[in-house]
Amino acid sequence: MADTNDNTPVMCVHGWGGSFTTTWERNGFTALLGDAGRPVIGVDLLGHGTAPKPHEPEAYADLTTRVVEALPEDGTPIDAVGFSMGALTLLRTATEHPGAFRRLVLAGIGKNVFERDDERSAKIIAAVDGDGDPEDNVSRLFAQYAGQAGNDAAALSAVLKQPQRIRLTTDVLSTVTCETLVIVGDKDFVFPADQLVDALPNATGKVLKNIDHFATPESFDFVDAVLEFLDAIPT
Image 1 (cartoon, rainbow, N blue to C red):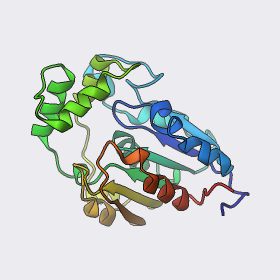
Image 2: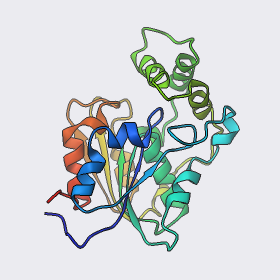
Image 3: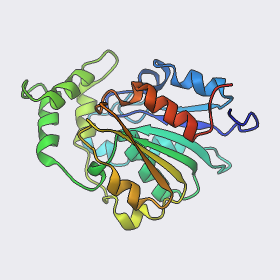
Image 4: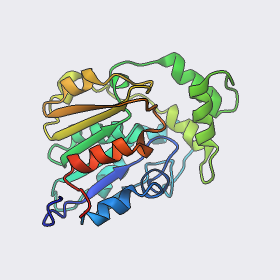
């Protein structure tokens, strides 16, 4: 059972091509948090959802801005859940704002924190720009997400072309001392996440069986693991 006295807010951050509504509200995840008495802080990253959608890649050099703006003004640590690009953004925020988070859930990230796959990135950008390889399933799925209702494909392409900031290294990650749960599907293209779990001082890892990248937020095992980790089981 959840601690009914725990009203720590939970910030939810979506991945590329998603939004707070499509990733966290539509599948009932935020309703479950509400049933557990946990206030929810919804964030739409720049270029997504209700946020502004500039078409210049330089505008996306620092995606943490929207997260930082949504943090409590009094500096009280909160819990946070992020998927894919949202998880990377939360992780970077945690390195730059120590003490911002009490518990952190990072889903859909793993080896990509340390390894750049420029070839895959180029294929995805080409697909989003309408010139992709129809035989490449991953890039084709990214293009489908870009074309969903409410999305701005040009803005989402600009997000993918954003200038590279300083990479997250093991030394930088060692400063993230909050309790952290890293969740990744064994069919995800970012699997495995062992190196990331090892780099974070207070992290545990969970592997979702037979789950690919895009299915992660919808997975019942994902939802159960997150609610348990946050001590937010609905009463």
